[in-house]
Length: 171
Image (cartoon, rainbow, N blue to C red; front, side, top):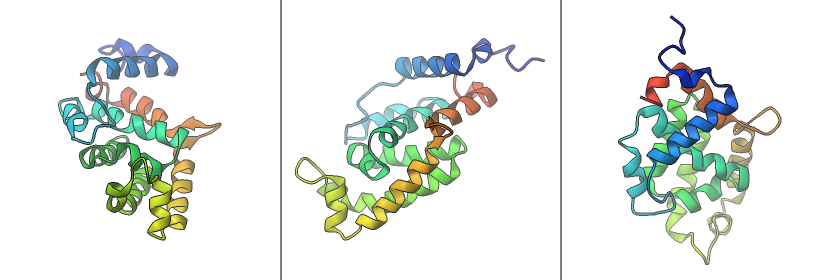
């Protein structure tokens, strides 16, 4: 049996499949990922495992493209979302990036309460004399977060995962 037979979406090229995944996320994911009350992460719990992993890792991809891993925690440091992001990276097979994310989590979560309009993640790291460690983690995450010519390792993993486990994304 053709692997696409039960899943016509898999007949799409990578760009089409990514569009389909993003459209599915757009209709199935509710809430504010910036919230600190746990409601966004709670809303992800009912999603199929692959789609939940994609929803949780989307914002990490944005952070790696626009800021850094340590800054990610300043925007998306709610503990349940942090846990789902790490779990999502592992579900998607991005083990090395998950390990770096876990290291950043250990570094940043103790500083979360200090970060805000008056104190950036970089400033919080500097006050804690952790700037060099933060920079090292950021550089490893940037390296792992890209494939080829600045392509997203996270979105590439989404595509592989969706093609191998469509029932865990679209089911």
